Length: 359
Ligand SMILES: Nc1ncnc2c1ncn2[C@@H]1O[C@H](COP(=O)(O)OP(=O)(O)OP(=O)(O)O)[C@@H](O)[C@H]1O
Image 1 (cartoon, protein in one colour):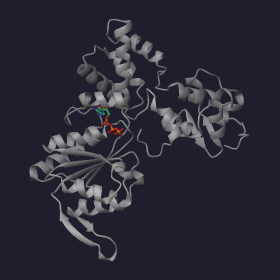
Image 2 (cartoon, helix red, strand yellow; image 1 turned 30 degrees about the horizontal axis):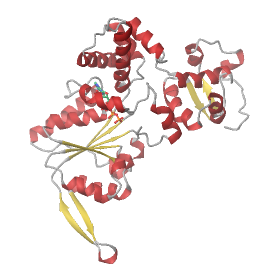
Image 3 (cartoon, rainbow, N blue to C red; image 1 turned 90 degrees about the vertical axis):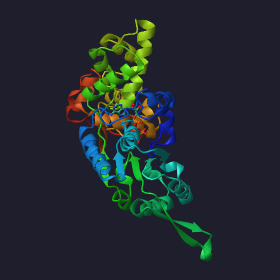
Image 4 (spheres, rainbow, N blue to C red; image 1 turned 180 degrees about the horizontal axis):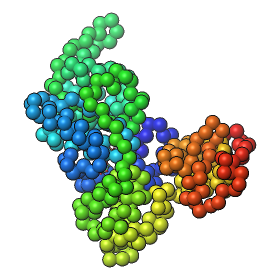
């Protein structure tokens, strides 16, 4: 897990999710093999690709190091992959680290001072860097220089250290959390969107080819439709469907095989899993569609409040199935339709259920 805004309770619950967007151990092992290696291979994100292509081409033509790049977007959309592509397209080495790994300015100084000319420094979760390190980064990004402080107290001196030109690629799930002085120092900022089903369809086909799995168009579409707009989830579902196809059939993935496999794993046709459906089911069946307070809803599904709020709700809100209102959580008409339930007449206008527990 690497959502900085996700609590421990939410993490425990999200860890085992097949539709969780963060990388688990198995993902990390296979992702290297599935990562596109060039901008041409990178599926979707047309605008970002086009803009980045211009930035990189222009830098290459000038024989210069590319401008610093900030990539923002949800986990699993391809930020790490793009940073590696940037390095590959520039013919430069890449160093990978993350905000939480840099707690002291000295940690950052050590990394910066060992960079080669033109190297790409990928800083994941850049919004989680410590303040002193962040301030050191400002100067490094702008002037390719850092001041290393030697000694303590009144006798401390700042020794300037020249750095070779490098390209910082920062990644964040929360661009809004970056202090403006840091954001302003990036020459190019790209916001990565969730992928369309047709794009995920291409991701599934591409990955199936690399994994040597046979999948037909309808089978790939079935997986894509349940992947929550996220290539990492598409790749993970593909691997689980492959297991099913291998054990229960002849190894080939068709629409029927994909649907049957994902039914076993409790991922429904819209990508909701057991937790999502439990939250939605409680909201509809116990509270008439709401409004109901978050705490009450969490008690009803036997989960921590944070788990409901941080793990289940974001996707339900994004899918237009649940709304967070000042009076509490409310199901939308699409939620009733998705669970195959008929809203009671009173629920048509949003329901009038009181939150007795003050959530
Ligand atoms: N546009 C894409 N085309 C094909 N595959 C992709 C694409 N984007 C991501 N992937 C696949 O999804 C997986 C996850 O991508 P990646 O690790 O780059 O995501 P991320 O945004 O860096 O995630 P996190 O925020 O968790 O670090 C990779 O294995 C990669 O193969």
